[in-house]
Image (cartoon, rainbow, N blue to C red):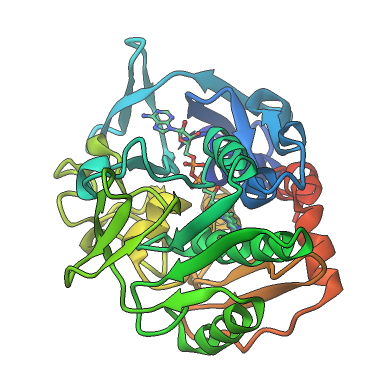
Length: 378
Ligand SMILES: Cc1cc2nc3c(=O)[nH]c(=O)nc-3n(C[C@H](O)[C@H](O)[C@H](O)COP(=O)(O)OP(=O)(O)OC[C@H]3O[C@@H](n4cnc5c(N)ncnc54)[C@H](O)[C@@H]3O)c2cc1C
């Protein structure tokens, strides 16, 4: 007799949707009941943020209802998780309901932590969600002269590339209209990018585009009155428009002692994507990348790895594969070219080569994202 297992995925962003869909693909409904619990109405293809801000794309192409993105046989529960009790294998929801599970995937993303950067709120712009991308677009449209600073201060790995894309594409747009707007880019690292192989590439791109690069500049506060960013060693740079990713943190309820605790990085397995000693709790997406720290990880390879592991376990087969930390990131480097960069825990990225094909891939990425990636087909 087949005992149906309960697989519960919490968090309905890219990582959760893809994981739930892929597990559904790999198991029959007799073998596994797949439930996705989330509190989002629509999924935003985050990779489109810079293009929306730069008016290269209509935002309606970058949004789809979560229900529409789920494969047949995935149960969607719109609710908010308030507590997870791993010892009892129970999940508590805001509505008062509770769910039990045989396998649990935590793909809850991160929450904003404005308290980590004084002056950020109400001042800095970014491209991590649709609303902020649209707002930045309006601000840039209304700017006739002045300085736009793009600062990367600790953006998590996959999100990071978007800020380089924004600076380079925007600067090329400005050059076509002979604008008086200056673009500066600040990096908290010694070079233009946290990884040396990419650092020289971006430094050269900035130089040839006419973007001033300021390295070793970790923004520790924003003086809204003087319109200046202040670094850890008290250097100051003035701006008219500031683009800076928000400070983020792990969702509060995951920090209890039975799950991630106060030092989540110590309580995740980088090779199995599991939490503590539990072999039935996985973590994926930005929630994982934030704790893993290295410039590695990706919701795509994580969703793929986790769903195959759970499927093998349900089918009683042995899957010795370890998570390799592989990631592939694409970005535009101007109005006609782009790059794709791949790396993993073990293999360093190579110096990227620009191509028109990478530009086109990035331009149409959301079609691929909604129709194939999130569906778990790839
Ligand atoms: C410009 C840009 C370019 C990018 N390019 C790439 C790329 O080329 N390749 C790549 O791999 N990645 C890329 N990324 C990153 C990628 O978009 C993110 O890693 C991905 O969207 C993160 O998805 P997530 O599901 O982990 O988190 P989120 O999207 O934050 O989803 C978390 C979900 O959990 C829900 N949730 C939160 N709390 C609760 C709760 N208590 N109960 C229920 N639900 C809850 C939220 O509502 C949300 O829907 C890029 C990002 C940007 C900004």
